[in-house]
Image 1 (cartoon, rainbow, N blue to C red):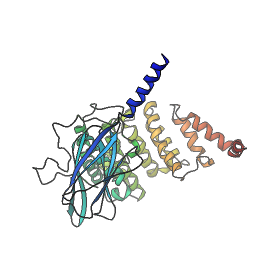
Image 2 (image 1 turned 90 degrees about the vertical axis):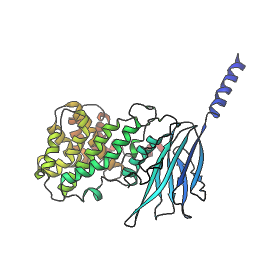
Image 3 (image 1 turned 90 degrees about the horizontal axis):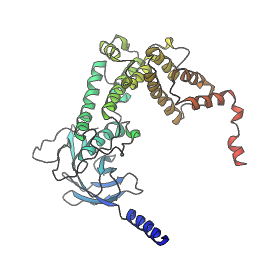
Image 4 (image 1 turned 180 degrees about the horizontal axis):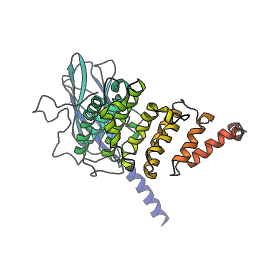
Length: 381
C-alpha cells in the first residue's frame, strides 16, 4: 500500500514536470533594417528570450509555459528609446504579429498587428499598455493643451474609443475568469489606425482572425466597461482640476456644469467619478472645507455630496488610494500629527470597516508615539 502511494506521488510530480507546453510566436518586420533587434520577456520568467531575425524580417521563437501569459516584445534599432508591445501567448498555440513603422512629419510611430491565438486580448492589452504605461495620455502634459471642457471631452472619448472597440472584440464573459489583468498596469502613443494595405490579412488595428486559431480567452477579470467609464472620469476631472489650478473657473464652463449635473450620488457605478470630482471641488472652493485640505477636505466634500452609504464608502476608498500613493512616494508621513484630521474625517465618512484598524492604529501612533518608539531595537535584542 505504501509503495502504491509513493508511486502515485512520483507520478503526480512527473505529470506536473512535463505539463509545460510550447507557445510559439511568429512574426515579421516590414522593411526590416540591419539595425533592428528583438527580444521577448514573458512575465513570470527570470530571463528574456532572444529573438533571431531573418534577412527578410521574419522571426519565430518558442517559449515553454504552463498557462496563457502576458509578454513584452521589445524592438530596438529605430529610435533613441526602444519600442515595446504587449503580446499574450498561449501554451500549445501559435500567435503571430506584424511590426511596421508609420512616418508622418519626421515622427516615427511603431505599429503592431495581431493574428492567431490571443489576438484580440493582445490588441486590447497593448492599447492599454501604450496609452497608460508607455505614456499617460491623461496626464498634465496632454490635458493642459485644451482650453475648454468640450475639447477635453472630445479628446478623452476619441482616446477611449479604440479600447471600447477592442473590448467588444474580446467578448465579455467568454474567457477564463481565473486569469486577471494586472490592475497596476492600468495607469493605464499610437492610435492603431487601419493600414493602407487592405489585402494584408494583418492590419494595424489587429482585427484579423484565423479560422484555425484557438479560441480566444479573456484574462480581464474586471468589468472592462466600468473601467472605461472610470478612465473617462479620470481624464475629464483631471482636466478640470488642472484648469481650476491655473485660474480657469470651471463652474463657468457650460459643458462642465452639465457633467457635474450628471453625477448621481445614489449610483455606486459613479463612485470613482464622484471621488474624482471632490479633487476639483476642494480646489475650486477651499473655503467650504477649511481648515481641512487635500484628502481630508475631499472626504468632507464627499459627505456633503451624497448620503448614500454604499456610494460614500466606495468613493472614500478611491480618495484614500490617492493618500496611500503619496505615502508610497514618500510625499506624506502617515505618522505625522498633520494627518490626524484625515483619519478623523475618514472615521466619520467610511462605515465599511475597511479602514477601522488602520485609523485606530495611526491615531494611537500620533497620540502615544512612545508606544512605538524603539520597536525595531527591542526586536533585535
